[in-house]
Length: 96
Image (cartoon, one colour):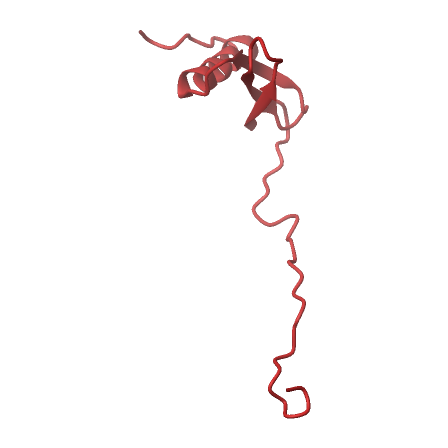
């Protein structure tokens, strides 16, 4: 097949990443927060647990977190709420 030019050349394409494309860097703390959820094995007694953390992009400091057995939006909201109450002046709790 190669002698009759029936094979297609294989091309190796490398993905090019634009490191600065779309990235916004904060100038001071509390401008941009980032959230992350990680699944952790807590042993056979507890099983899988979920850690939701909120990170300040400027200082790379964890401003709020929540560790729970369930992966629900309420746990993520609690982590953000903890960050707001702890870092921002005059932060208010979630209305009931």
